[in-house]
Image (cartoon, rainbow, N blue to C red):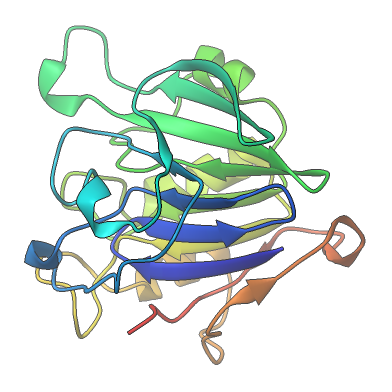
Length: 209
């Protein structure tokens, strides 16, 4: 499986079953997707920074809400993480089952997930978590969320970069909270079930230009 961060909260996953693009963003974020091709697109919230389906090539199926789905050979669980009564904070986190791995994407989650939300998500091997604040988690609550989910690999997203136009904070504070060092960034992540680390490890990806 090959995983690439396309910028903001957008992730591309290339697996044997299908290619998935999560939360495609438009150019207002500062990132240019380059029209990636996908079989499946998931949308966490109705915002051009997360729902730019027109920026994805091919004829992908689109999921944009909570529930359980089976599309293009991929099992997907959408979990609402909105606070009760908070219509402004609508967000759907997704968990994907691909190549014997469970991948969680928290999108624009604003608060540490509740026990019910964690139960819906279930066990997660690889977790994409927002860490730059703004309308989403910042460093300390993001680190707390990781400690609750206990994934093997953590990929931070939605933080300040040279391209990002939103007023977000850099990834450094999250890394400090996690007790991780800022090592070289990686252009992509290639992972299998057998290559997962024994303990939680943070992997910083460079956004694809």
